[in-house]
Image (tube, rainbow, N blue to C red; front, side):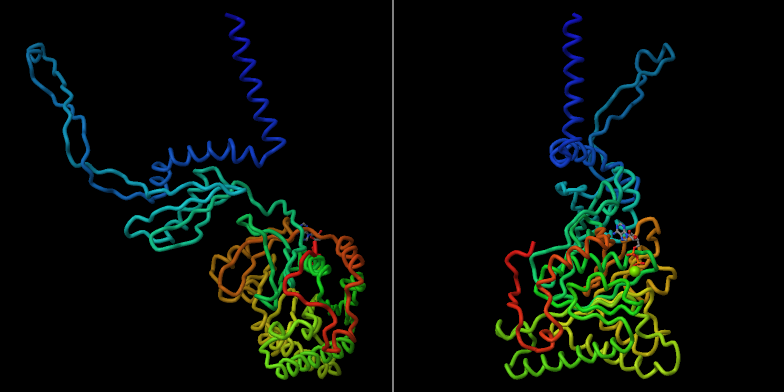
Length: 453
Ligand SMILES: Nc1ncnc2c1ncn2[C@@H]1O[C@H](COP(=O)(O)OP(=O)(O)O)[C@@H](O)[C@H]1O
Ligand SMILES: [Mg+2]
Protein backbone atom coordinates (compact mmCIF):
# COMPACT_ATOMS: atom_id res chain seq x y z
CA UNK A 1 0.00 0.00 0.00
CA UNK A 2 2.70 2.41 1.08
CA UNK A 3 4.87 1.15 -1.73
CA UNK A 4 2.33 2.12 -4.39
CA UNK A 5 1.91 5.53 -2.80
CA UNK A 6 5.66 6.09 -2.83
CA UNK A 7 5.87 4.97 -6.44
CA UNK A 8 3.01 7.26 -7.48
CA UNK A 9 4.33 10.30 -5.60
CA UNK A 10 7.85 9.59 -6.79
CA UNK A 11 6.62 9.34 -10.37
CA UNK A 12 4.76 12.63 -10.11
CA UNK A 13 7.75 14.39 -8.59
CA UNK A 14 10.03 12.99 -11.28
CA UNK A 15 7.61 14.09 -14.02
CA UNK A 16 7.35 17.59 -12.55
CA UNK A 17 11.13 17.84 -12.25
CA UNK A 18 11.50 16.59 -15.79
CA UNK A 19 9.06 19.17 -17.12
CA UNK A 20 10.78 21.88 -15.13
CA UNK A 21 14.17 20.89 -16.47
CA UNK A 22 12.81 20.63 -20.01
CA UNK A 23 11.39 24.11 -19.74
CA UNK A 24 14.53 25.44 -18.13
CA UNK A 25 17.03 23.95 -20.58
CA UNK A 26 15.12 23.81 -23.81
CA UNK A 27 12.34 26.37 -23.66
CA UNK A 28 11.67 26.30 -27.40
CA UNK A 29 10.80 22.60 -27.62
CA UNK A 30 8.95 22.84 -24.31
CA UNK A 31 6.78 25.56 -25.78
CA UNK A 32 5.91 23.59 -28.91
CA UNK A 33 5.67 20.24 -27.16
CA UNK A 34 3.87 21.04 -23.92
CA UNK A 35 2.91 24.63 -23.25
CA UNK A 36 1.43 25.45 -26.63
CA UNK A 37 -0.86 22.38 -26.86
CA UNK A 38 -2.10 23.12 -23.36
CA UNK A 39 -2.76 26.73 -24.27
CA UNK A 40 -4.51 25.67 -27.47
CA UNK A 41 -6.90 23.39 -25.60
CA UNK A 42 -7.70 26.21 -23.18
CA UNK A 43 -8.28 28.70 -25.98
CA UNK A 44 -10.79 26.41 -27.72
CA UNK A 45 -12.54 25.38 -24.51
CA UNK A 46 -12.98 28.92 -23.25
CA UNK A 47 -13.62 30.70 -26.54
CA UNK A 48 -17.40 30.85 -26.08
CA UNK A 49 -17.01 32.64 -22.78
CA UNK A 50 -14.17 34.86 -23.94
CA UNK A 51 -16.09 35.91 -27.03
CA UNK A 52 -19.24 36.56 -25.01
CA UNK A 53 -17.28 38.58 -22.45
CA UNK A 54 -15.67 40.68 -25.16
CA UNK A 55 -18.97 41.30 -26.94
CA UNK A 56 -18.17 39.29 -30.03
CA UNK A 57 -21.00 36.76 -29.90
CA UNK A 58 -24.28 36.97 -31.77
CA UNK A 59 -27.66 35.72 -30.71
CA UNK A 60 -29.13 33.13 -33.02
CA UNK A 61 -32.34 31.15 -32.83
CA UNK A 62 -31.67 27.46 -33.09
CA UNK A 63 -33.64 24.28 -32.84
CA UNK A 64 -32.63 22.53 -29.68
CA UNK A 65 -33.79 19.60 -27.62
CA UNK A 66 -34.81 21.07 -24.34
CA UNK A 67 -35.77 19.55 -21.06
CA UNK A 68 -38.93 21.09 -19.79
CA UNK A 69 -40.09 20.68 -16.32
CA UNK A 70 -43.82 20.13 -16.56
CA UNK A 71 -45.78 20.15 -13.37
CA UNK A 72 -48.20 17.28 -13.41
CA UNK A 73 -50.98 16.95 -11.04
CA UNK A 74 -51.14 13.30 -10.52
CA UNK A 75 -52.25 11.06 -7.77
CA UNK A 76 -49.76 12.70 -5.51
CA UNK A 77 -51.64 15.96 -5.86
CA UNK A 78 -53.95 14.84 -3.21
CA UNK A 79 -51.01 14.80 -0.91
CA UNK A 80 -50.52 18.53 -1.80
CA UNK A 81 -47.31 17.74 -3.63
CA UNK A 82 -46.63 18.54 -7.26
CA UNK A 83 -44.85 16.02 -9.32
CA UNK A 84 -42.50 17.40 -11.85
CA UNK A 85 -42.09 15.39 -14.95
CA UNK A 86 -39.11 15.98 -17.19
CA UNK A 87 -40.17 16.13 -20.80
CA UNK A 88 -37.86 16.39 -23.76
CA UNK A 89 -39.07 18.69 -26.47
CA UNK A 90 -37.74 20.13 -29.72
CA UNK A 91 -38.08 23.89 -29.80
CA UNK A 92 -36.43 27.07 -30.96
CA UNK A 93 -34.27 28.81 -28.39
CA UNK A 94 -31.85 31.74 -28.36
CA UNK A 95 -28.21 30.72 -28.30
CA UNK A 96 -25.05 32.82 -28.09
CA UNK A 97 -22.83 31.92 -31.01
CA UNK A 98 -19.15 32.74 -30.83
CA UNK A 99 -17.29 33.54 -34.07
CA UNK A 100 -15.84 30.40 -35.60
CA UNK A 101 -12.14 29.80 -34.85
CA UNK A 102 -9.63 28.45 -37.32
CA UNK A 103 -6.60 26.35 -36.49
CA UNK A 104 -4.37 27.70 -33.74
CA UNK A 105 -0.89 27.95 -35.17
CA UNK A 106 2.11 28.32 -32.85
CA UNK A 107 4.70 31.06 -33.26
CA UNK A 108 7.90 31.45 -31.29
CA UNK A 109 6.23 33.84 -28.87
CA UNK A 110 2.57 32.87 -29.01
CA UNK A 111 0.12 31.89 -31.69
CA UNK A 112 -1.87 33.01 -34.69
CA UNK A 113 -5.45 32.19 -35.23
CA UNK A 114 -8.01 32.99 -37.88
CA UNK A 115 -11.49 34.05 -36.86
CA UNK A 116 -14.53 34.15 -39.13
CA UNK A 117 -16.45 37.39 -38.68
CA UNK A 118 -20.14 37.20 -37.93
CA UNK A 119 -22.35 39.03 -40.37
CA UNK A 120 -22.24 42.70 -39.55
CA UNK A 121 -18.91 42.58 -37.73
CA UNK A 122 -15.89 44.58 -38.87
CA UNK A 123 -12.19 44.13 -38.02
CA UNK A 124 -12.42 47.24 -35.82
CA UNK A 125 -14.70 45.28 -33.46
CA UNK A 126 -11.83 42.87 -32.93
CA UNK A 127 -9.31 45.67 -32.49
CA UNK A 128 -11.52 47.06 -29.75
CA UNK A 129 -11.86 43.63 -28.16
CA UNK A 130 -8.15 42.77 -28.49
CA UNK A 131 -7.16 44.03 -25.06
CA UNK A 132 -9.95 42.08 -23.40
CA UNK A 133 -9.00 38.92 -25.28
CA UNK A 134 -5.36 39.41 -24.25
CA UNK A 135 -6.37 39.53 -20.59
CA UNK A 136 -8.68 36.55 -20.95
CA UNK A 137 -5.90 34.53 -22.57
CA UNK A 138 -3.32 35.84 -20.05
CA UNK A 139 -0.96 37.02 -22.78
CA UNK A 140 1.03 40.21 -23.31
CA UNK A 141 -0.92 41.42 -26.31
CA UNK A 142 -3.30 40.44 -29.04
CA UNK A 143 -3.19 42.26 -32.35
CA UNK A 144 -5.43 42.06 -35.37
CA UNK A 145 -3.31 41.40 -38.44
CA UNK A 146 -3.94 40.29 -41.96
CA UNK A 147 -7.52 41.32 -42.55
CA UNK A 148 -9.28 39.55 -45.42
CA UNK A 149 -12.89 39.64 -46.47
CA UNK A 150 -14.82 37.98 -43.69
CA UNK A 151 -11.75 36.79 -41.82
CA UNK A 152 -9.28 38.36 -39.41
CA UNK A 153 -6.15 36.85 -37.96
CA UNK A 154 -5.46 37.38 -34.26
CA UNK A 155 -1.84 37.37 -33.24
CA UNK A 156 -1.20 36.66 -29.58
CA UNK A 157 2.22 37.21 -28.01
CA UNK A 158 2.96 35.83 -24.56
CA UNK A 159 5.56 38.39 -23.56
CA UNK A 160 6.85 41.66 -24.93
CA UNK A 161 9.45 40.61 -27.50
CA UNK A 162 11.06 44.02 -27.17
CA UNK A 163 12.31 43.64 -23.61
CA UNK A 164 15.27 41.61 -24.73
CA UNK A 165 16.50 41.98 -28.31
CA UNK A 166 19.35 39.85 -29.56
CA UNK A 167 19.91 39.77 -33.29
CA UNK A 168 22.89 40.43 -35.47
CA UNK A 169 22.58 43.54 -37.64
CA UNK A 170 24.63 41.83 -40.35
CA UNK A 171 22.70 40.30 -43.26
CA UNK A 172 23.91 38.74 -46.46
CA UNK A 173 22.03 41.06 -48.79
CA UNK A 174 23.56 44.20 -50.19
CA UNK A 175 22.36 47.43 -48.54
CA UNK A 176 20.22 45.48 -46.11
CA UNK A 177 20.68 45.54 -42.35
CA UNK A 178 18.78 43.97 -39.51
CA UNK A 179 18.88 46.61 -36.77
CA UNK A 180 16.54 44.89 -34.31
CA UNK A 181 13.23 43.15 -33.76
CA UNK A 182 9.65 44.02 -34.49
CA UNK A 183 6.93 43.63 -31.92
CA UNK A 184 5.46 40.64 -33.73
CA UNK A 185 8.68 38.75 -33.13
CA UNK A 186 9.93 39.10 -36.70
CA UNK A 187 13.27 40.67 -37.54
CA UNK A 188 13.30 44.36 -38.27
CA UNK A 189 14.97 44.68 -41.64
CA UNK A 190 15.99 47.91 -43.34
CA UNK A 191 16.52 47.39 -47.05
CA UNK A 192 17.84 50.58 -48.56
CA UNK A 193 17.11 49.36 -52.05
CA UNK A 194 13.40 49.24 -51.21
CA UNK A 195 13.21 52.29 -48.95
CA UNK A 196 16.22 54.41 -49.91
CA UNK A 197 16.19 57.16 -47.28
CA UNK A 198 15.39 57.11 -43.59
CA UNK A 199 14.49 59.70 -41.02
CA UNK A 200 15.26 58.70 -37.45
CA UNK A 201 13.72 60.95 -34.82
CA UNK A 202 13.90 60.86 -31.05
CA UNK A 203 14.67 62.87 -27.94
CA UNK A 204 18.17 62.72 -26.47
CA UNK A 205 18.88 59.34 -24.89
CA UNK A 206 16.11 57.71 -26.89
CA UNK A 207 18.41 55.45 -28.88
CA UNK A 208 19.14 57.27 -32.14
CA UNK A 209 22.90 56.85 -31.96
CA UNK A 210 22.47 53.22 -30.97
CA UNK A 211 20.42 52.64 -34.11
CA UNK A 212 23.08 54.41 -36.16
CA UNK A 213 25.67 52.10 -34.57
CA UNK A 214 23.60 49.07 -35.54
CA UNK A 215 23.33 50.33 -39.12
CA UNK A 216 27.08 50.98 -39.27
CA UNK A 217 27.80 47.53 -37.87
CA UNK A 218 25.44 45.97 -40.40
CA UNK A 219 26.86 47.87 -43.38
CA UNK A 220 30.54 47.68 -42.43
CA UNK A 221 31.12 44.21 -43.96
CA UNK A 222 29.41 45.21 -47.22
CA UNK A 223 30.96 46.72 -50.34
CA UNK A 224 29.48 50.15 -49.70
CA UNK A 225 30.95 53.55 -48.92
CA UNK A 226 29.91 55.16 -45.65
CA UNK A 227 29.93 58.93 -45.30
CA UNK A 228 29.33 60.80 -42.04
CA UNK A 229 28.03 64.25 -41.18
CA UNK A 230 28.61 65.10 -37.55
CA UNK A 231 28.60 68.77 -36.76
CA UNK A 232 28.63 68.19 -33.01
CA UNK A 233 32.39 68.32 -33.21
CA UNK A 234 32.67 64.87 -34.70
CA UNK A 235 32.47 63.11 -31.36
CA UNK A 236 29.87 60.63 -32.59
CA UNK A 237 31.38 59.47 -35.86
CA UNK A 238 35.13 60.05 -35.56
CA UNK A 239 35.63 56.67 -33.82
CA UNK A 240 34.24 54.99 -36.94
CA UNK A 241 36.63 56.84 -39.23
CA UNK A 242 38.46 53.68 -40.38
CA UNK A 243 35.31 52.57 -42.21
CA UNK A 244 34.18 56.06 -43.35
CA UNK A 245 35.08 57.24 -46.81
CA UNK A 246 34.47 60.83 -45.78
CA UNK A 247 33.50 62.68 -42.63
CA UNK A 248 32.41 66.28 -42.27
CA UNK A 249 32.65 67.84 -38.83
CA UNK A 250 32.61 71.55 -39.64
CA UNK A 251 30.28 73.63 -41.70
CA UNK A 252 32.75 74.26 -44.48
CA UNK A 253 33.64 70.56 -44.72
CA UNK A 254 29.97 69.87 -44.82
CA UNK A 255 29.37 72.21 -47.77
CA UNK A 256 32.33 70.73 -49.59
CA UNK A 257 31.32 67.13 -48.97
CA UNK A 258 27.72 67.72 -50.03
CA UNK A 259 29.00 69.48 -53.15
CA UNK A 260 31.08 66.40 -53.89
CA UNK A 261 28.09 64.14 -53.41
CA UNK A 262 25.92 66.18 -55.74
CA UNK A 263 28.67 66.18 -58.37
CA UNK A 264 29.00 62.43 -57.99
CA UNK A 265 25.25 61.99 -58.40
CA UNK A 266 25.33 64.04 -61.57
CA UNK A 267 28.21 61.95 -62.87
CA UNK A 268 26.25 58.78 -62.14
CA UNK A 269 23.26 60.26 -63.89
CA UNK A 270 25.38 60.97 -66.96
CA UNK A 271 26.83 57.46 -66.84
CA UNK A 272 23.37 55.92 -66.74
CA UNK A 273 22.16 58.13 -69.56
CA UNK A 274 25.12 57.11 -71.66
CA UNK A 275 24.34 53.43 -71.20
CA UNK A 276 20.61 53.81 -71.49
CA UNK A 277 20.04 52.68 -67.91
CA UNK A 278 17.33 54.06 -65.69
CA UNK A 279 19.33 53.55 -62.53
CA UNK A 280 22.66 52.18 -61.43
CA UNK A 281 21.22 48.72 -60.79
CA UNK A 282 20.48 48.22 -64.48
CA UNK A 283 24.03 49.16 -65.45
CA UNK A 284 26.37 46.31 -66.37
CA UNK A 285 28.09 45.00 -63.22
CA UNK A 286 31.57 46.26 -64.07
CA UNK A 287 30.31 49.82 -64.54
CA UNK A 288 28.16 49.96 -61.46
CA UNK A 289 29.39 52.59 -59.00
CA UNK A 290 29.77 51.83 -55.32
CA UNK A 291 26.63 52.56 -53.24
CA UNK A 292 27.05 55.36 -50.73
CA UNK A 293 25.25 55.55 -47.40
CA UNK A 294 25.25 59.01 -45.88
CA UNK A 295 24.75 59.17 -42.11
CA UNK A 296 23.77 62.47 -40.53
CA UNK A 297 24.00 62.52 -36.75
CA UNK A 298 22.00 65.61 -35.79
CA UNK A 299 20.36 67.19 -38.77
CA UNK A 300 19.42 70.39 -36.93
CA UNK A 301 23.12 71.21 -36.68
CA UNK A 302 23.26 71.45 -40.44
CA UNK A 303 20.50 74.02 -40.55
CA UNK A 304 21.07 76.14 -37.46
CA UNK A 305 23.21 79.20 -37.89
CA UNK A 306 25.17 80.96 -35.22
CA UNK A 307 25.17 84.25 -37.10
CA UNK A 308 24.24 85.83 -40.40
CA UNK A 309 27.58 85.02 -42.02
CA UNK A 310 26.60 81.34 -42.13
CA UNK A 311 23.39 82.01 -43.97
CA UNK A 312 24.84 81.27 -47.39
CA UNK A 313 26.43 78.02 -46.29
CA UNK A 314 23.23 76.87 -44.63
CA UNK A 315 21.25 77.61 -47.78
CA UNK A 316 23.76 75.66 -49.86
CA UNK A 317 23.68 72.74 -47.44
CA UNK A 318 19.93 72.64 -47.51
CA UNK A 319 19.71 72.67 -51.31
CA UNK A 320 22.44 70.07 -51.72
CA UNK A 321 20.93 67.72 -49.16
CA UNK A 322 17.58 67.92 -50.90
CA UNK A 323 19.23 67.23 -54.24
CA UNK A 324 20.99 64.18 -52.82
CA UNK A 325 17.69 62.91 -51.49
CA UNK A 326 15.90 63.42 -54.80
CA UNK A 327 18.53 61.75 -56.96
CA UNK A 328 19.84 59.25 -54.46
CA UNK A 329 17.27 56.53 -54.99
CA UNK A 330 18.14 55.87 -58.61
CA UNK A 331 21.86 56.41 -58.22
CA UNK A 332 22.53 54.49 -55.03
CA UNK A 333 23.22 57.29 -52.59
CA UNK A 334 21.21 56.74 -49.44
CA UNK A 335 20.47 59.09 -46.57
CA UNK A 336 20.05 58.09 -42.95
CA UNK A 337 19.16 61.28 -41.13
CA UNK A 338 18.91 61.44 -37.35
CA UNK A 339 17.44 64.34 -35.45
CA UNK A 340 15.57 65.39 -32.34
CA UNK A 341 12.99 67.07 -34.46
CA UNK A 342 12.91 68.15 -38.03
CA UNK A 343 10.21 70.75 -38.23
CA UNK A 344 9.72 73.70 -40.51
CA UNK A 345 11.26 75.89 -37.79
CA UNK A 346 14.65 74.74 -39.10
CA UNK A 347 14.07 76.48 -42.40
CA UNK A 348 12.13 76.09 -45.59
CA UNK A 349 14.28 73.30 -47.04
CA UNK A 350 13.54 70.91 -44.21
CA UNK A 351 9.95 70.10 -45.04
CA UNK A 352 10.92 69.23 -48.60
CA UNK A 353 13.77 67.07 -47.32
CA UNK A 354 11.47 65.30 -44.91
CA UNK A 355 9.07 64.48 -47.72
CA UNK A 356 11.90 62.66 -49.50
CA UNK A 357 12.83 60.51 -46.51
CA UNK A 358 10.22 57.81 -46.90
CA UNK A 359 11.38 55.47 -44.18
CA UNK A 360 10.51 56.77 -40.73
CA UNK A 361 11.63 55.74 -37.28
CA UNK A 362 10.20 57.53 -34.28
CA UNK A 363 11.81 56.88 -30.91
CA UNK A 364 10.57 58.40 -27.68
CA UNK A 365 9.96 62.07 -28.31
CA UNK A 366 9.43 65.08 -26.08
CA UNK A 367 6.42 66.55 -27.78
CA UNK A 368 3.52 65.04 -29.70
CA UNK A 369 4.24 67.26 -32.73
CA UNK A 370 7.55 65.57 -33.36
CA UNK A 371 5.79 62.22 -33.46
CA UNK A 372 3.23 63.46 -35.96
CA UNK A 373 5.96 65.19 -37.98
CA UNK A 374 7.96 62.01 -38.13
CA UNK A 375 5.20 59.55 -38.75
CA UNK A 376 3.22 61.96 -40.91
CA UNK A 377 -0.40 61.14 -41.35
CA UNK A 378 -0.17 57.54 -40.30
CA UNK A 379 -2.78 55.61 -38.46
CA UNK A 380 -3.51 57.48 -35.19
CA UNK A 381 -2.69 54.26 -33.37
CA UNK A 382 0.93 54.60 -34.57
CA UNK A 383 1.16 58.08 -33.05
CA UNK A 384 -0.40 56.75 -29.88
CA UNK A 385 2.20 53.98 -29.75
CA UNK A 386 5.04 56.46 -30.34
CA UNK A 387 3.84 58.76 -27.57
CA UNK A 388 3.56 55.82 -25.21
CA UNK A 389 7.24 54.79 -25.46
CA UNK A 390 8.63 54.90 -21.91
CA UNK A 391 12.03 56.41 -21.11
CA UNK A 392 13.19 53.17 -19.45
CA UNK A 393 13.34 51.36 -22.77
CA UNK A 394 15.74 53.27 -25.03
CA UNK A 395 15.82 51.90 -28.55
CA UNK A 396 12.07 51.21 -28.69
CA UNK A 397 10.53 53.00 -31.64
CA UNK A 398 7.72 53.01 -34.14
CA UNK A 399 8.84 52.13 -37.64
CA UNK A 400 6.87 53.11 -40.71
CA UNK A 401 7.72 52.05 -44.21
CA UNK A 402 6.30 53.29 -47.46
CA UNK A 403 3.28 51.05 -47.61
CA UNK A 404 1.49 52.64 -44.65
CA UNK A 405 2.05 49.72 -42.31
CA UNK A 406 3.78 50.38 -39.02
CA UNK A 407 5.33 48.37 -36.24
CA UNK A 408 6.68 48.84 -32.76
CA UNK A 409 10.27 47.79 -32.83
CA UNK A 410 13.49 47.94 -30.86
CA UNK A 411 17.04 48.21 -32.04
CA UNK A 412 19.55 45.70 -30.78
CA UNK A 413 22.05 47.21 -28.36
CA UNK A 414 25.29 47.94 -30.18
CA UNK A 415 27.81 49.67 -27.98
CA UNK A 416 30.23 52.22 -29.42
CA UNK A 417 33.04 49.77 -28.78
CA UNK A 418 31.25 47.15 -30.84
CA UNK A 419 30.64 49.48 -33.74
CA UNK A 420 34.22 50.76 -33.58
CA UNK A 421 35.47 47.20 -33.65
CA UNK A 422 33.34 46.49 -36.72
CA UNK A 423 34.67 49.65 -38.36
CA UNK A 424 38.26 48.60 -37.67
CA UNK A 425 37.69 44.99 -38.74
CA UNK A 426 36.35 46.07 -42.12
CA UNK A 427 38.60 49.06 -42.66
CA UNK A 428 40.07 47.32 -45.71
CA UNK A 429 36.66 47.55 -47.44
CA UNK A 430 36.62 51.34 -47.19
CA UNK A 431 36.83 52.95 -50.60
CA UNK A 432 38.67 56.26 -50.49
CA UNK A 433 36.68 59.37 -51.26
CA UNK A 434 38.59 59.70 -54.52
CA UNK A 435 37.54 56.19 -55.49
CA UNK A 436 33.91 56.95 -54.67
CA UNK A 437 33.86 60.12 -56.71
CA UNK A 438 35.83 58.59 -59.57
CA UNK A 439 32.42 57.35 -60.69
CA UNK A 440 34.12 54.24 -61.86
CA UNK A 441 33.44 50.85 -60.46
CA UNK A 442 35.75 50.26 -57.56
CA UNK A 443 34.10 47.28 -56.00
CA UNK A 444 32.46 44.27 -57.49
CA UNK A 445 28.82 44.99 -56.79
CA UNK A 446 26.78 41.90 -56.89
CA UNK A 447 23.23 42.57 -55.67
CA UNK A 448 23.44 39.46 -53.51
CA UNK A 449 26.65 39.00 -51.67
CA UNK A 450 27.45 35.35 -51.13
CA UNK A 451 28.53 35.62 -47.55
CA UNK A 452 29.12 38.70 -45.54
CA UNK A 453 28.46 37.15 -42.16
N1 LIG B 1 18.24 49.23 -28.22
C1 LIG B 1 18.80 49.51 -27.06
N2 LIG B 1 18.87 48.57 -26.09
C2 LIG B 1 19.43 48.87 -24.90
N3 LIG B 1 19.94 50.06 -24.57
C3 LIG B 1 19.90 51.02 -25.48
C4 LIG B 1 19.32 50.81 -26.77
N4 LIG B 1 19.41 51.95 -27.46
C5 LIG B 1 20.01 52.84 -26.66
N5 LIG B 1 20.31 52.29 -25.47
C6 LIG B 1 20.96 52.98 -24.33
O1 LIG B 1 20.41 54.27 -24.20
C7 LIG B 1 21.41 55.25 -24.12
C8 LIG B 1 21.10 56.41 -25.04
O2 LIG B 1 21.11 55.98 -26.37
P1 LIG B 1 21.66 56.88 -27.55
O3 LIG B 1 21.60 56.04 -28.76
O4 LIG B 1 22.97 57.51 -27.20
O5 LIG B 1 20.53 57.99 -27.60
P2 LIG B 1 20.48 59.32 -28.47
O6 LIG B 1 21.52 59.24 -29.53
O7 LIG B 1 19.09 59.33 -29.01
O8 LIG B 1 20.70 60.43 -27.51
C9 LIG B 1 22.70 54.59 -24.53
O9 LIG B 1 23.66 54.81 -23.53
C10 LIG B 1 22.41 53.13 -24.62
O10 LIG B 1 23.13 52.43 -23.65
MG1 LIG C 1 23.07 60.60 -30.03
